[in-house]
Length: 392
Image 1 (cartoon, rainbow, N blue to C red):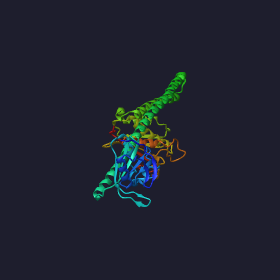
Image 2: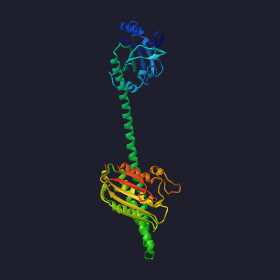
Image 3: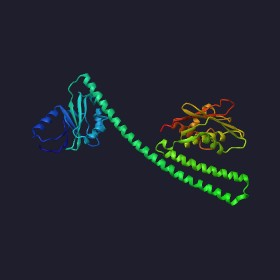
Image 4: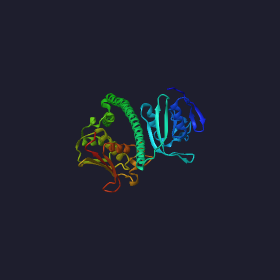
């Protein structure tokens, strides 16, 4: 077979590719193309039309995107590009009509293939043999399936990319938590050492009240170090079961109550049932500490009362923290669980405490309810539903 290099030229039958006239089958093919039996379109890697041949391809514009002139191929771009790596396969779109210059074409069969010899995609356009409505509907369903498969493939790639980004973000977060934990533990140790030095230097000359406060200072710094260690383990554990432990809930709440700063007239009462659970100590401590601190910090009287009660349910451990303070209006009870929400600009903190509590419970399968105190007379009650079984 004689080889030749295609060249674009203009003729009455559209943009044609010149061919040697002395090759019989080439001449026959040229005649069929000129009489509208079939048409050929050449497309480059960017899916831009570079040339066309035959009367049946006259509606295709050279120099524009393939799908601009041939709308039925829209959505199949990924499948067409994939032909380069799947030799012997084609993309078929049968029995479609195309409107160009206000005229509707007869039904056409479109077939796209990759020609490695020419280094281009080729679109073969041929007249469709009339078919039954059932065949046409079948073709439509196949096209719909091709489009759906292409979309599914695209979403799978996007999901894989998102998972990879999430994995990197989690790794960065774990490294960040480790650095922060280390950097915060160092000043905590220094604080305890400094307290020991003060106690040693003053010796017996230290007033008893100062000695008590110094002991409390060392205890608080030690507790802070323990919390940092526990929270670091919780945040970096691959599975929650790695940090599940036996927790005496009464000891946890009493430890928190003993460390909360309040005036001498302020009372905190603890009663009810406080079981020993196999659960996560760090987030339980985090939830209760935030709620008890808030109840004391946002109270409007120095002789206030916070009542903490535990109750065992079938599938949860319920803890209620109620105060007799100013309360929270019902219209604000959902908003206060969102990040950076404060009821007053004069409030201390950044408005993150309740948001952290709510999110922690939600991730563990628990819940936080904000209620009016059952006895009435003001105040607010936070009810924690702590799951007895943590899903790992």
